[in-house]
Image (cartoon, rainbow, N blue to C red):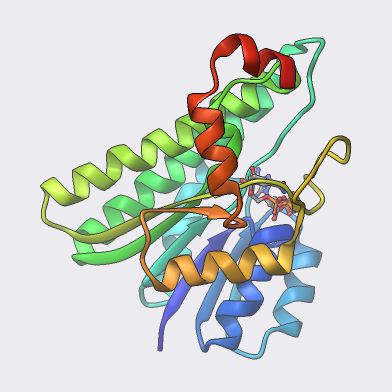
Amino acid sequence: MKKAVIVGASSGIGKELAKILSDKGYTLGLVSRRKSLLEKLQEELPNKSLIRSLDITSMNSIEKLKRLIQEMDGVDLIIISAGCIYINQELDFEKEKKTIDLNVSAFTAVINTAYKYFSKRGKGHIVGISSIAALRGADDAPAYHASKAYVSNYMEGLRVKAEKENLSLKITDIKPGYVDTDMAVKDNQFWVASAETAASQIFRAIEKKKDHAYITKRWRLAAWLLKIIPGFLYKKIL
Ligand SMILES: NC(=O)c1ccc[n+]([C@@H]2O[C@H](COP(=O)([O-])OP(=O)(O)OC[C@H]3O[C@@H](n4cnc5c(N)ncnc54)[C@H](OP(=O)(O)O)[C@@H]3O)[C@@H](O)[C@H]2O)c1
């Protein structure tokens, strides 16, 4: 039987992935801060799950995450879905810092833990959720866009490291466009996917052990445009 930990499982994409993986027979470790939501999700899932109410921005959470993996007698897959966005035109540093603390520092602490765990075990699969926002900067949420570029490039670095170390370790970078979750900023959105659709496409990317996946698939086209569009034109569409 397969086992997975989902960090950021209480809502949105992480929660929907938990439902799919549990339906497919996975035993799950569900991690996030809101215990009541984790308990509710645990009741809904058809297969066994353990829950941990953890704030991954606090350093002692990493030890607790390691203990959860031990308690599960090992895992095959670690998904890092936890993330936040603040619209921050006024450049309030507290908001930028919260984004950096979670999307950069805590993400690094968790993915390092996952990498070292799988490196010792000899095999495994890490999935991180960056964003289409990783491709360019934006004035409304500068730290978010920069943090997602970090997430994406960090995973690429670890993918190369795993290959050089001859590890049987897959690292999948999921780049969603807009997904209808608590986090979604409601204005000016298009091609918005439900969290269920996003999770089902992410699950297929996990099964295929892809390096990258745009969610939904049509965002591959937007990504191509975003990469080639010159700065003066890009500014006009922001
Ligand atoms: N929705 C979109 O349009 C979109 C687009 C591109 C990328 N993404 C990315 O997709 C990922 C999932 O987001 P979502 O859309 O599913 O939003 P969401 O529903 O807000 O989910 C965020 C998850 O992260 C957890 N989390 C937040 N802070 C945490 C902390 N300090 N410690 C532990 N867990 C924490 C939340 O649980 P608690 O609050 O219970 O801790 C929640 O389970 C994020 O990385 C996001 O950047 C989303």
